[in-house]
Amino acid sequence: MTLAEKLQRPNPLIMGIVNATPDSFSDGGLFADPECALHHALDMARLGADIIDVGGESTRPGSSPVSASVQTNRVIPVIEALKRSLPADTFISIDTSLTKVAESALNAGATIINDVTAGLGDPELLNLAAERGVSIILMHMQGTPCTMQDNPSYVNVVEEVLGFLMERAEAAKAAGIPNNNIILDPGIGFGKSREDNLVLLANLWRFSAVGYATLLGTSRKRFMGAVCNETRPRELVAATVATTALGVMAGVNIFRVHDIRENRQAADVAFAIKQANER
View: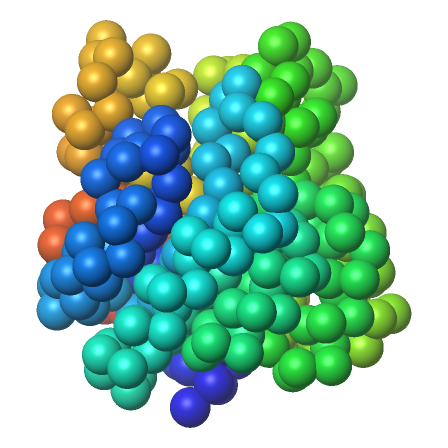
């Protein structure tokens, strides 16, 4: 079964995060060793992750780009090991904006491309996704990871983010990617103020209503800490769970998270409530 086929079902999917990096904001360095990353991913699959997202470049605020060769060296051993060890119904995603990295990852066993630049970082990435027939996640980001939180500004954040994503979806389709392989991500925390993030979360239904699958990535993010007076990312699990439940009720399809068990439970309970209301 492909991800596009699985997304035809209404049940929310959980995407587990594997940062094969030394400097990611929440767990940098913990899973840089391929063996550690493998065991972590297997634990996530056991706890209910439908997708494992592997990245070799941190995109935290203030981070700098990492070359294709460095990213490849970090992620390919992990993806190869995951392909051998994960349950057959667990998907592998590559978190990159570079075609060379994505191509190597697809050859190693990934079937999803997760691009924070929505195809703008490397013009050949959309063509690769089309040629290989894989799903691609297109995310909104104002600026670059290095500059995105300097002073983000919008006139109407919902309309601007949604308009950008619709433009990028059209570009993906022009490259030959079918609608059911396109997933939209409003990019919570990527070039947004605390208020921008909250407004986007209050309007998630707008993104779910445009005819594409959607992804929400709020896991342990700083704006929630500002709301609840918590500066430690790992102490924001309950805050993340709240947004997952909210997202399920708004029709979001995929939730990209660090903490699988808690978000799996939140998604399943929220979905059961939503289904009861629709019967």
